[in-house]
View 1 (cartoon, protein in one colour):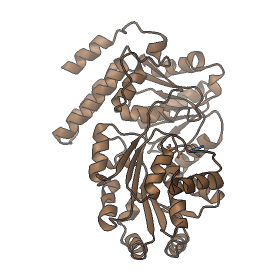
View 2 (cartoon, rainbow, N blue to C red):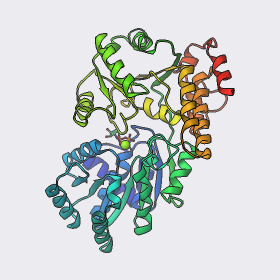
View 3 (tube, helix red, strand yellow):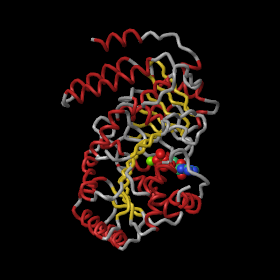
Length: 433
Ligand code: ADP
Ligand code: MG
């Protein structure tokens, strides 16, 4: 073991109380402590946070300064900082929820070198006042590390694009010697290339762990009456007593979220709505309830879920088609983070495909962009229409070679080889015209 890795391991055990690193964590952490850039692709729940939290502690102990974590998720910053403080790590966040006094206090602590981690929203990075702080730390060699969480947000090809992430290349331009760690749970080839280019990570070492989530059972059904089908799935197929499980139901529009949540409530399911059109307070309250209470079903648009660390989500259902495989993988990946059996259920219908096609065609984006979006949609259709192992499709899409004989035995096609369903042919025809 290198000295860096040894020190990292003692931090893991003494500060976080975990016996050992998982998967690639140790290798990533060693690289980052050593001051090298890294790009980390690990599935949701793999433990990406420790990849920067452990180096942050080691680097701060060695007098190398603070780690600045860029995250788009204000609610999660709050949770992460709370969890760190609980184990005795000095951490804080700067975002729009703080008043002037609190902001000033944190800025003072930052400048005094008292913080090990500072979480900041991406828009903060271009704020001149914040830049002056970073400059001052940098002049004194007290900028230890930049961690860019949810780094796929920099890519316009992805489904979570955030304008402010484009500014993050500034970190490299302004502070070229401060190591950077970019992390994401979702990145196909396009998104990956985009992250490297836009964040200027050409020199970063790439760490990719397997994207397989063996405990998630994938199932796709032909969409007829999706709400009723979902309910039947929940009662009959999901698992015994499954109606008391926590789960997420994704719908394609705010209106459908509201209607579906209401309908499920009428059917005796404890369902809560979540979408960007709800008032901020209600959204926060519903999210909080979902995280803290048992057995709630969150009915949501894709505005819900990024970074959510709820271990016992037992199912994720798509009543409407996601935009692409990255979205599907990311959203279904919120199920079964505790490693116990979980279901990913999706209703797939021709009307969704036609609608998404139209949205791409009619969008004002440039042709190259549309071409890639169409390609991504087609890959999702291939997955939905596939009669062979769905897990193999998923993994192959993310560049993992499963070999020709692979059968996961935990997707609908492996468990009950399907008779080709009726809509397949019309769907193909609709796509080719
Ligand atoms: P990600 O960001 O990759 O989705 P998180 O960083 O939120 O994942 O971690 C998911 C969960 O796994 C957390 O509850 C975390 O405490 C736990 N965890 C991470 N690494 C380890 C480890 N080496 N040993 C035990 N638990 C871990
Ligand atoms: Mg995370």
